[in-house]
Image (cartoon, rainbow, N blue to C red; front, side, top):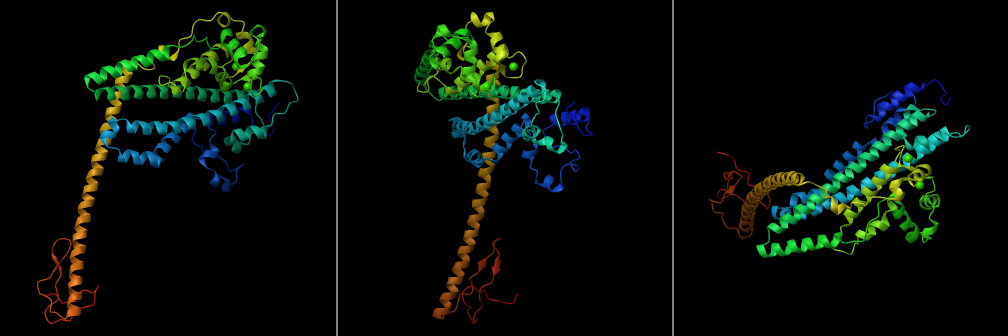
Length: 443
Ligand SMILES: [Ca+2]
Ligand SMILES: [Ca+2]
């Protein structure tokens, strides 16, 4: 029995489940294990495990709202800029950050997943192996306040399930993001065409078709994960004799971190040779973002085929079983990305309608800002006029003081309503020093 102390496994499991279903810090009674000072210091980040995808989405939204660069751009952009796609470039700039954040999140997830699977292995394997609970707890800080003394295999299974489903969401989000990217690209192309005359449009369309053809013209792509594909890596990347191809040796060579599994990154690295047949960063017709989407498709395909226990890792056993299958030895041809358009025309129309609505919103905001600006300018002008009049009055009085000339009775200073706020100095009175107003009794 791994459980010790007074905690029953069911109780801890129930609390665990409760935590997993919600990324928001929960209000369980922490006082038994956590002193109040620590609760105050606890930031949302330290409580969150990072396993929850919605937390990531919140971060992206925060990021967009906080990003001064983007906000300024949004306010300073006029309609012409938007039509020319300048704002879209700014959005690209933002989505670059979004991608970086996604990648960072993914690295964290994979590390956690690996730790969990290792711990599960230790528990299931030889008796006598003690799981390092402190190390595990460090990966899942939110469990600290429940202070579990130990995990059972089923607890780890649940955590693994939670981590893998978050990674699935990650892939889904990547596909969606890619689709939006492709639609934005097409939108900008269509907008550009609208601005051309008939001759220019024809030339542009011809050039576009030419580039598409050039991109599609590449050597045959091996089916990802097939014997042909792996043999090419074996021969060209590893520099080994194709006659000597051995799946076990291949696995050990490409299990880069030596943990006995192919993880997603290790699998994706295997496709670089294939991808280089289609994509070259120097070519105008090859879009490197599309290359990354193709890499993702290839990895997903191989994972689907080979990872039979669905823990998003390919064990040596799973790999060896796959190398005996018919699909490995005699694979079908692989349909590349350009043979499958990422979006339907219907989706494209919807996307363009969405952009038009956004454009409308931006225009409204920009009109409001323009009005505010005009109002501020009007107020500024009024203030300037008042200031000038006051200055003239003061100058005149100073002049009177030095030259001892009687002031003309009709000099008046206007207040903000245009009324006579400051009556001029009456005859025979003594002029005051600069900066002082005459204190005359009101009639
Ligand atoms: Ca590995
Ligand atoms: Ca597996």
